[in-house]
Length: 471
Image (spheres, helix red, strand yellow):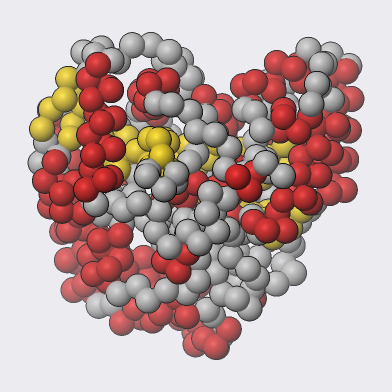
């Protein structure tokens, strides 16, 4: 049994082999660490690899399994996590020079839940500074898209997405404030879930924008994303934004038919914000879902993107509140350009600006309420363009409000509304780079969203591993 090949598989493939003791968690973890050592020197997905800690954890879970204790499908599975999640055994630096060497006293809630599930944490994955955009060169090299080094790895969860795409972990957790799980998932050809706002606790996750931040999983298959989500979702009294709604089994509907369900598509929205080839790929996916029995329904979402013009003032003001205005001025020269500019926007934001944003947010919510009276799910591109160049977010880009609004037209509205959104691969473009597809569901319908994503996955030719993942 070739362990390198197993490392390139899925959680749902490896878990039964671990359970029946055909695969040793120690040997599997060692093989994954070897892949990281061999491949990641080019990809820069990890900022810290915990070799000794991962092997100790692997030995501990292996002893558990050999003694007859099996905790479930994440037991003995090597994972990674974005470097904004607190870890008591590893540094958590949030992509910033200001936090260099910081080791928290306790884990984030998500990390504790993964530990309880028996997962093995390989290390911390690269994030843009404070989970915004831009990877300041003083901090370290930006992650590299494993499909094409000249293309972007995505927004702030880029390190996690690259690690998953290159099979340097079986899954990971990132955060999404304006698209930072879904955009990296789309451009790296993997699956990413931004769940309903509050579904996964943010306790111990570096705050960015308190009313927009979401935490979610990234993996190579829809089922794997569901397994990761199931392990950590649920109410947490320690997070004031945590939703109390029951989670249930998010995988209960996987494999069921979507026949008779209604899928909303707005061609005008696509034409306003997506390139022609992306539109064609998105409509082709709609056609496959129609063949699977869904009814395609025209919806009006065009004005939904107006909310994106309020993103920077809202996110900036909330980020400034989380960081502290006085502290910002004390440390202003220690920020990278993008984080500094965002906090400056926050400082310049007025009460009138926030009132206008609140009104726009309510209008966007009303537009979605109307759409979901007509349909069960919405279909959008993962990204409006083919995979953008590296300079878009991997370095410190110029990002005026209008440009940012256009770039996030298909993602940020659902951070404001809190709707669950799933990014799934949608084949390859003419240059052999991934297209992403985005599915949107009603609040707390992650199970239905995963069911739909699985149907898309089964109807779409699977992607091969990116060249840089082959080692």
